Length: 116
Image 1 (cartoon, helix red, strand yellow):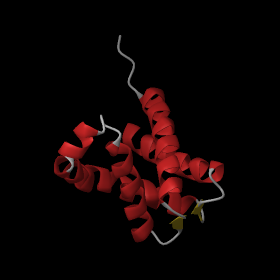
Image 2: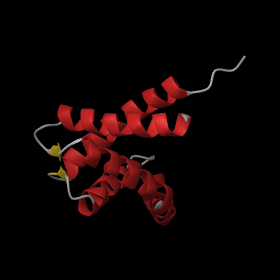
Image 3: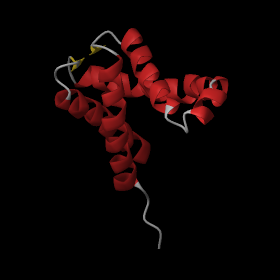
Image 4: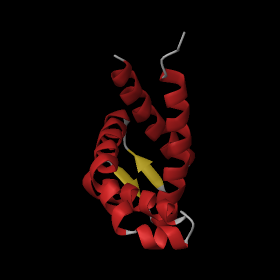
């Protein structure tokens, strides 16, 4: 049940982030936002670790800032695969990934099990 709530809130976070970045990020409706959340989670689980391993030297040289580029690239990859989701460029993808990560950290805190 907790996973379903997190998934639905992630879709809402995608929709809210697209609303905040209206100039360059467009999501047609909530169904596409859920699809973006699903494809983004799959891409983060499969593609992102491969990219991180392949770019370890440049990530070390840039003191980890290259991970922001990887996040933006993942967003642009999701843009390619989801038809109702559009990102107008790299900088919009970077802003989208930063804002979405803030929302996802709040969702994680909100849905975390309370320890006794």
